[in-house]
Length: 462
Ligand SMILES: Cc1ncc(COP(=O)(O)O)c(C=O)c1O
Ligand SMILES: N[C@@H](CCOP(=O)(O)O)C(=O)O
View 1 (cartoon, rainbow, N blue to C red):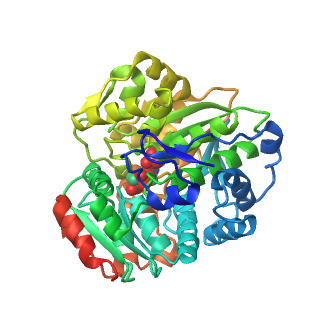
View 2: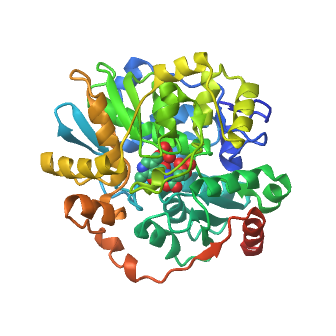
């Protein structure tokens, strides 16, 4: 199994190399040269299996010879052992033919744990075997950072630096990043927004001196392994509702396009997905683009679903690569135009995108109303991101096709918005109940690439 860059000029890599290197050296993102296929019989055979066994069968063909079967099984088992629900990703019914896929039972209460817990184990196994160490730098609008810190804190062969936008994450998200005491963890509050953090991260990857000197690695969804781990729950949930005999639709609260891209890969592998619906908050650049208005950046408006406050949606590049016939030159050109503010999508590419994805948006008010209405109609207390998904899913549901909306975070991560909508203050689970009492450790830093690189160089273990 080989991985190729969306910009077309970086070397092809194995799974292990692509995982450890993050961004391709031509600035692109790695994707599989060919997506492995599953037959209807193989998909049907997933019925009744544990989440771990399903994960093994879905991901195995993508891993190549990086790990033996036994090593890979053990890695998966360790990754999901700390989840607080036996099903790992349980489905609950909201309404006739509308289901919620609860992805918030991991250690940091967000869907990021599904991939990050696995990546933590994959990195540890690969680095130990190589006798190597890396510096992980991550950009976060809240959840990736806490999940990465949880997965990598205390590991001897990794330093972790997380860039988050100062004042633009929830207090729970911030505290999850700033209260761990392990010396290899560094939380940096950047005077900027998430797009500034992600741009700085990509600039670090494109500075080869810095990249090679600190042995830079990435655990954002830049990293193909992040996307791969998220493909699994599309299969597990769809099969439990009758796939492959039945078609299933999904609605996905979307920001950086990693989660819904995983659904797109599941469909490419053979899962019979009817609609894949992109749900955005008021920062609706993806919804506008899929509606034919081009991809043009505007100001980011802070919202009650802050993890989706994104203008430069990193993984959109991966689907553009397919939409433009896997032409790396065309993708490079679009990404150059994006640096100047945006680009128009060609008619052919737009047709491809509209065939693959539907979309919708939720305003702040609609998000609050959805939290309230869902609690009235069921017993489910939604986080604001999941509420964006439910609002948009309700607009796209068809009577004869089950719709699964991804619930991407636990409501207790966003208590202010949830309480405003429902009157209920969602409590943190007991293991985190002292989060507000723990001392914080954070470095405030200017939105200045040089300052960030100097900080990192000065704080990696020698
Ligand atoms: C709670 C939550 N929901 C939705 C998203 C959007 O996911 P993606 O960036 O993969 O589109 C994020 C951030 O990634 C998130 O943290
Ligand atoms: N919403 C994310 C943004 C980063 O996304 P990623 O999937 O590329 O890591 C967050 O919570 O940080």
